[in-house]
Image 1 (cartoon, helix red, strand yellow):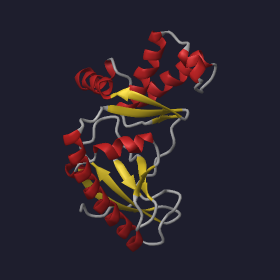
Image 2 (cartoon, helix red, strand yellow):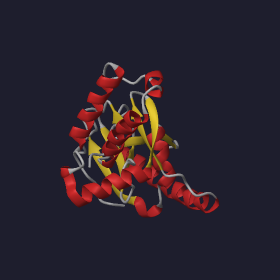
Image 3 (cartoon, rainbow, N blue to C red):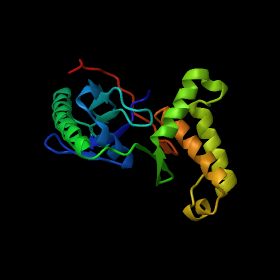
Length: 209
């Protein structure tokens, strides 16, 4: 899947900051066993560091990294930032382990629809994933088709590719469910928002930590 950045390190000395509710959801779930690889990559403007996560639930982002808008000057700076992210993730994973002992987490996977956050039940995403594994696109559309369906329903229900909470509140239950299924299907493919925004592609990888 494409790398999706929802948590950024503001500076090498700074703390991890979620950039959205989607990022908050990711931070609540991180465990030590999720840490997979440190990716150092170069873009047109400079260098970036990403920590790639594995084993995250479908519908939850799987990368944390330095801000796209603030590239670092060289590879060494990016490596230092990536190392700092790893340190903070290790600490965060221990905090999460302790928190779960006291209070079980609620399985919600956020989806951003035109700036409004929908809390999609994890069970819905998982069930769609089970159908996809069993029969593939025969019953479950791919990400592009699911996005086209969501756009079409918004145009039909909202008068355009936009979201109006007042119009949504007045919709029949089956129409709300139809929109929810489209959002849950996009989450299955780690698409976390509509309209989408382009994801950066890594050009150089470093070794796993």
